[in-house]
Length: 296
Image 1 (tube, rainbow, N blue to C red):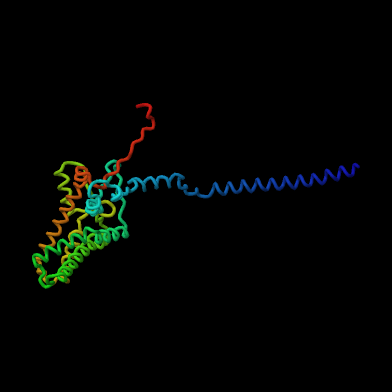
Image 2: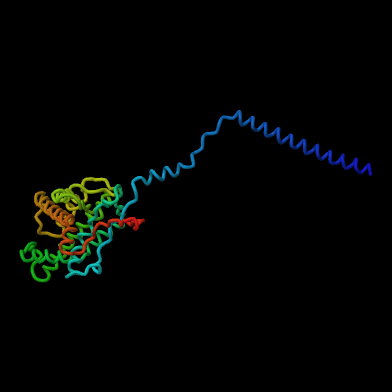
């Protein structure tokens, strides 16, 4: 019995010594590692965890872009001659926007390449475009302009085709091609506030000053270069056009004045619409909901 007890003590004593040695080695290794880390140069400071939040705040400092109000549908208007009025109003509203005054710092969303192409297609194949082409072709035939086209139905058809091609090419250059090349916004930015004189000058100014896609102001390259390109192109399919710099400049100036007149109409269209109860696309004011209505 004593022999068993002695053997048990000796065996456990051996295990105890082994564990003690192992623990001592672990402690010494930890001390050695600490000493090595103490002698090594300090590690560079890590990026603070709130850095991504600061970057996001800086990125969103300008505020999100705001979509302009949607186009007025004919179904939304119940006044007299709603289809006629709505048809003529849509081309004005399609290129008329203004920044939301109720949200300072917010910018209108940029037109993408697809949006500019859609704008060109919608303007080119709008019913008003066909009506204007037909009306101008009738005036030209009555005045016997472009006599090489002749008279009768064939002459009217040629004049109609020339008028439609001129309007379509003008919109292609001014709504899509040059706005895409120069990153220009082809829309007219309404002022919508201020005196009538200030708003009139703002509308006339658009013939010279436009907006980039990022919201900054720039020279209206699309208006001048697009109009000039359309006039020069029309000389290729209208053989009776008078050539030369003076005649071309006169036609370019007349077209730009016509566009300026439409910009004035776009600027004051909200007032005209409210006066005659016509459909228009107005500024969407936010609705203020009182969280405590009982305190009123």
